[in-house]
Image (cartoon, rainbow over all chains, first blue to last red; front, side):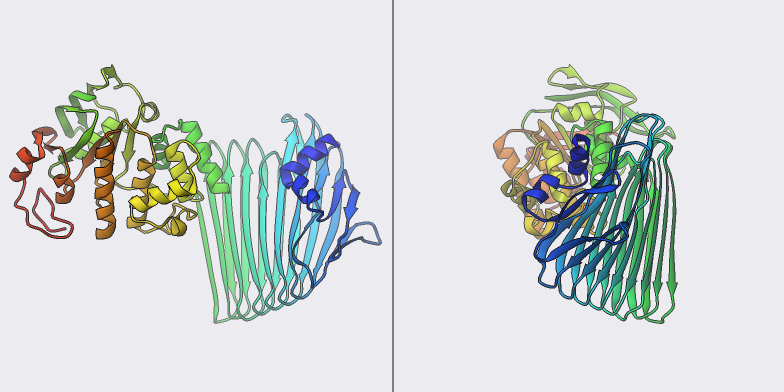
Length: 307
Length: 242
């Protein structure tokens, strides 16, 4: 459990969350090891054992639910399906994420399939953090999250997702379906190094009038790592969509950014931006005039960029 | 004391910009370097800060040769530099930049004090990113505040007036005068601005890569242009109203 605790502290403020008595379920090496429901948040195991159903009542206001998953043993291939059912008018913060700790030469995989059903007027903040720790030689830590959100009228979901290092391979798929007046905000922060590979796929459909999505991905590709960013926003109604991919490459990092827009309504207003480049020399120089070394300056710039 | 001895610098294409320039900057006081565009003022400032290296010549700080030191090493010795064209950063907030400049965590009151010196309200700006959402004037003021945050021996401001409105400009002049009163650091300001020249202890005119005039404000100022009162003064070299 020591390695699990270390991972929990990396992917969430676990000690704080536990002390607050928030609803939670901890998954360790492919099975649930601790679970707590609260008055307004009920966590149930699916009958087929494939994952959880989490029900957030309309009375929930500013409450939190945490469902982190940790893998600390080799050769685990963990697949879990978690569904979140958010009642009308509820307001909740959901903390998820996954950490994998394996030794040199070991491999492990986690695939978390999360679906969010937001009823009218509900509000969710979803925080998801992924990290790999342990050996650095011949490891294969794979995290393939799939997030699908269904936003009913006037609901709002803000997703903050980050991968802070040590994940050898990831394919991160996020799909959204927005009804009238619904809003989806996604902030992605991604760091790859060594030979790591990360693929991000956003696919959001704006079906309702006045629905809106704002996708912003900031990433840093170091070493020999490779990243792909694919986003598709489809506007089927009077709506607004924005997709932004900003990447910094250092050393031999490579990034392929492919934002796409499909407007199927005359009043759909969709924008995409993509920028890839190295850290500007003037930025390094400015921080060096504060007495930082070149390496310290680069680190500060990357930390700020990924925050 | 900063001493420059026989400094030469040419562009990569071989165009000489600084020609055997020698200069001495005292430990306190406010010196303004002025002169026509293209005369070598900004090059001089960048050479002192260590952003570029001279082709020939020697730079001494308190008698120690710092010619071979890079920009980081010079900053650690107390040489600060405010860029003429400030740099933008995605993700770094105004507060972050002030803390990076200061080299230590700074509290709310210090953030407020630094930003108010350049005419910005801390509440509106401290959490904003130093990115393209800021106007040219805003970013210039934040650049100056980041340098004011530092404990410096010598502070170099490269055309601090550019992009600053009248109200903020008055605040900036006050900040320069306050630094002068505190006598903690010497200031070297690259400027054409009459109001800045009027608070200088010393004016150095650099033209065509050399110092052509160097003396007290009272000695040098009358020879630059004919002045008349106007809110932000006028360009001291060309006489054009600003």
